[in-house]
Image 1: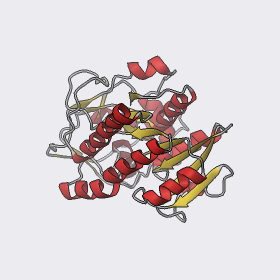
Image 2: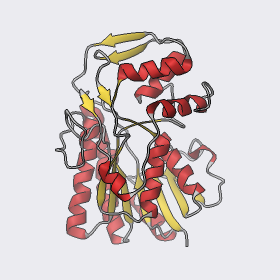
Image 3: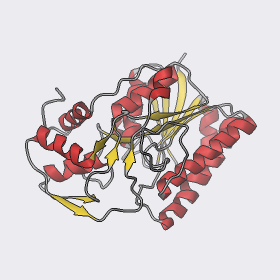
Length: 313
């Protein structure tokens, strides 16, 4: 029997990949709660086995109706309106429209015995570290995006302890790839590709030697799918490549693939940026088979998706 899954944040590029991956498995009926059904879901609206409903995560009455009517077994939460450079005012809006409504949502899930998957942030929830960061590392976010994720994580753990909430927390690294917008201001690889393809200059905060863990979105969605298939619950996992690359190294790979140079403007380093962030993925590998593609392969795949390059080969 198929499981019924409600997804918040399905219209983002990570959500789109998750919807596509779970739909292709033919194991789930998917319900997508979206703000605007006319602009959402990338043509998923008419797919058998996918139901699209307009609404907000703050509409608890609507959500409870969905939980009952659709007999939801699992909720996947990908909603966030913040980025690492978001301001205090942005954070206050996030509290009102995402964080506090999520607390209410969790109470509904407990009431209806529904499992919960939360996408946190491996890239911002930890502090600086000289080595690879495991799930046991201290949580010291240095921006409001990471802090908002930590608030929700803490509440999930509290409700698991006090009310037996069944959960899965994923902390992805810097995610890039298929369906990501290259004209946006978020996601270093996507922004870099957008700039180079439009013959524009790229701004880098600092000297480009900060190290990041980049993970292809299809590897992230695949990891979630396998965790669900194995019924892994009540755990927190990093989801990354386990390898670090400086921003300058990433640009070198992009330039090699596209056979062109990119104009770079180096700016003063920002306080919201860590010097190094590479995730330890040993715990994830204990529970599923997980072999993320190399950065070069992932960027090749992304370039192929946007209509350039060598189709990822």
